[in-house]
Image 1 (cartoon, rainbow, N blue to C red):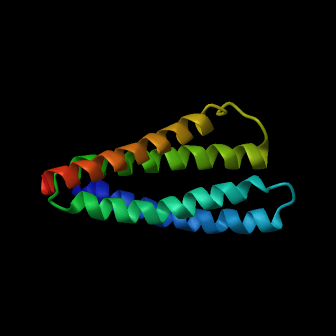
Image 2 (image 1 turned 180 degrees about the vertical axis):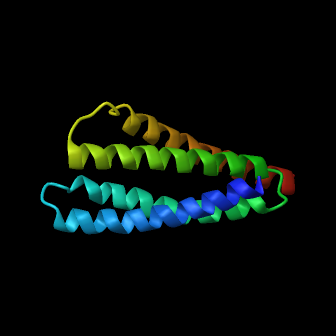
Length: 126
């Protein structure tokens, strides 16, 4: 699990980089306003991944749920952001399914964060 958490931390760094790049592109590329949403998703989830992976490393009752939530959020945010970026810069393509699947996966990851927090709460403070 440690290697995957380290990879997720690296993913957070990549999300941060790509988020700043998307913000710059949105400001300078005509017709690329959708990249503002991509920038927001990537930057917010970069910070969230760092926090969630830190919780997954703790010896808490919900550690595995924290781990699963980080995986879901990373995968979902990557799919959503890639799909919106490609749609914005290249037009419709064969991966139109990636944005709704990525968004749904990200939302499910956040529900798992909620579950992990509740597990930790109720098991630590019965």
